[in-house]
Amino acid sequence: MIKKTEAAAKQFTEQLVSRTQKAMELGAPGKRLLQQLERESGPSIMRGLIRRQRVSDTFSFLEKAGHLELSPEAMVTESAYGALFTDEEVNWCFEQLCDCGYFR
Figure 1 (cartoon, helix red, strand yellow):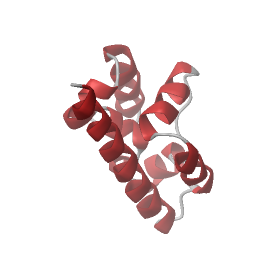
Figure 2 (cartoon, helix red, strand yellow):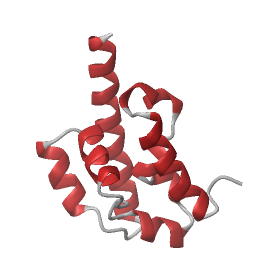
Figure 3 (cartoon, one colour):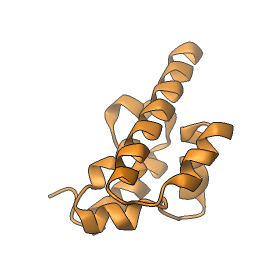
């Protein structure tokens, strides 16, 4: 189980880098997140943001641009990464996305 979780965390981090780069191509701020990802795993970064009840740097931009699918918060709600986050963490991200009309 640990290897499976480690593999999922690595995949989450790689996907987060990719999505952040795509968001930056649209004009979103993402440099700080990419710098953090060089030092820390994606799940760890997201757990820290959620614990502080803060959305990612890219969230507001992506909401306005209509591309919340690129947000780290959307990734947290994906079933492929369910083992990486608690129900409370997933629910918090889900609420942020619902408040913006992402899940209709």
